[in-house]
Every structure is written in structure tokens, then in C-alpha cells.
Length: 79
Image 1 (cartoon, one colour):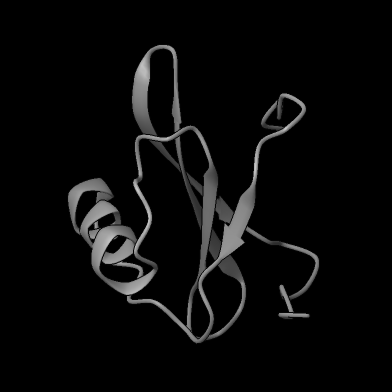
Image 2 (cartoon, rainbow, N blue to C red; image 1 turned 135 degrees about the horizontal axis):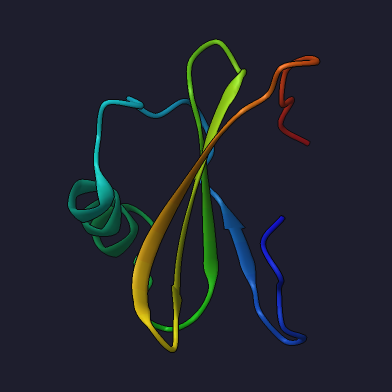
């Protein structure tokens, strides 16, 4: 579980993302595609093609980090 402080925005990238991409290329996608700063403290969520893998990119006091999560019980369906 990722603790989320109050006031943090969560940005969800629509469509599917190539899950072979790492932290730097996802941060570049945030800058170019979403026109946001990946170092601003917001959470950016990316979903794989099959929907069972989610990657969360976030920046906190320690730096930029990437949290991959495999959903065992089902799929993540976009709202």
C-alpha cells in the first residue's frame, strides 16, 4: 500500500502502456503526453494491455520511484 498524503493528485494515463518501460521513459511520457511535471509530487498510474499489471510513478521526499503491481484476483478496469 502506498500512503498518499492529502492534496495529492492522481493522474490516470488512458489506454494501455508498454509495461517494459522503466521509470525514465514513463516520466518522459508524463512530460510529453500529460504535460505534467513528474517531480511535482502527484501520482501517475499506467495500466498494461491485459489489465492485470499496474505501474504507479510518484515523487516524494526521497526522489522519483516506480511501484509495479500485479493484480492476482482480477483486472484493473479504467473508469
